[in-house]
Image (cartoon, rainbow, N blue to C red; front, side):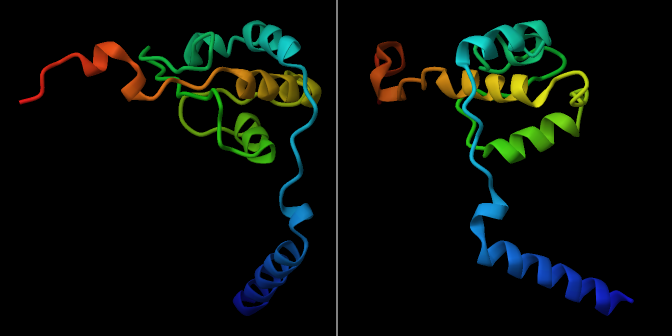
Length: 126
């Protein structure tokens, strides 16, 4: 029985490797404007901040702005998270709204490099 499971797993990996389009679907064409509204309405800001910059609150929301996760991985985590985050099933947060939230998070400005922040570079180095 274990051998059969191993063969099934290897066959699945072979199919995914042969067809990358099956492994990762492109992100939906969401609306960043609608995503900001959904981000606020669904309370995401309470842990992740209004810009997705994360929080030091007791919940410890992570930085999710400009996430490197492909949409499918982002969606899977939102639907079945680990840690303190509650699950947002499709009945609560439809796929279209989740796509909009993803577009909003991807639209957030990237932080400046440390070398471009004067305060971080003003201290004397000895």
